[in-house]
Amino acid sequence: MAQILAPSAQWQMRFTKNSTNVSPLTSKMWNPLVVKQSKKGSVKSSEKFRVFAVKSDNSTINRMEQLLNLDVTPYTDKIIAEYIWIGGTGIDVRSKSRTLSKPVEHPSELPKWNYDGSSTGQAPGEDSEVILYPQAIFKDPFRGGNNILVICDTYTPAGEPIPTNKRYKAAQVFSDPKVADEIPWYGIEQEYTLLQTNVKWPLGWPAGGYPGPQGPYYCAAGADKSFGRDISDAHYKACLYAGINISGTNGEVMPGQWEFQVGPSVGIEAGDHIWCARYLLERITEQAGVVLSLDPKPIEGDWNGAGCHTNYSTKSMREEGGFEVIKKAIYNLSLRHKEHISAYGEGNERRLTGKHETASIDQFSWGVANRGCSIRVGRDTEKEGKGYLEDRRPASNMDPYIVTSLLAETTLLWDPTV
Image (cartoon, rainbow, N blue to C red; front, side, top):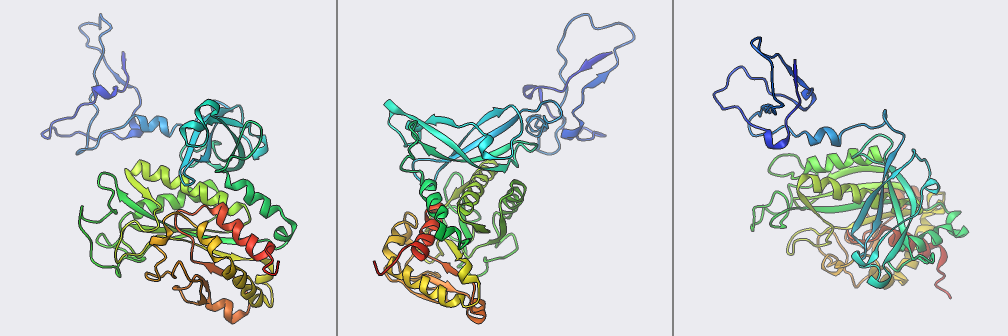
């Protein structure tokens, strides 16, 4: 008996269209193939056998898929940890992998690591080492098993946070007793746009052209109205698997644009979950051959921009008499409008025009159920006299560590009388 292993990629061939009685092979059928030798003789040489990889239509069996889906848990206690951090632009996510000797349950069990900061715009070439501090752990939906994703922040070798480490200051704000006692909740609505790879034009749009005007696309179904649902759904499930507190998704007003919501999350957790969700979305769009854009106004003209509306409440806001607490918070926010706008994302002036469900970037406003205001209060909050507020100013490319901590600082720590 001669055992013939499945072919290498260069040996993959197709049967002609005239071939009959051929059953396509699936990836689960790639076991070693065994054939009988001829009765007249045996194989006298170490001739390499070529095995035909059957193709169904234009699809080719990809043996790499087996290795990508390989579960190594029965064979080793070692796991893969993907260390994730924010790069020098403040919006790019970077990552690299390392092997750990056993599964871990808490970031304190993980070793610190380092990377070349001169290659991410975060350190000079003559002193390029940046240290990664593990801060939050999520399950890895790509590798499965006990493998993990690790959200890190960044420090110099001397232990000082580097300038792009916005998590460090946010953690300080959230550890303040005045903030911690109020148990701040956040619900963040992350909008994003999917672009075609070659032309950097929204998914579903004719190349160099425009679809019909906005109206039929929001939360729509249909091949002529919904573009990228498979990416949104894949991301939804990946977030649930990872342990991200994702609460929903929907198609947005501009075709090719989507949104997912994370929360309610408490304190620093909100930023950790949004950054991990963004990383998953980058990986999924990478696999789909689609470009992810967090630009707040990806298409100029009569098209909605992309925001990251941030819903916020404190313990006092959620209790009886909370509406008065919300009004006081809104007053504080009005006095620091410029400070917030400057920290709410790059290019936001192209989005906050007073049109397309936005307020003017130059004027602070608030209202009940008004999506054209800086701060919106829901009808239920007004009716019940307690609840939350929605800050509609943050752009889609905002840093959630900055926005969440700034909201807490302005409403809980900042005194306008001083």
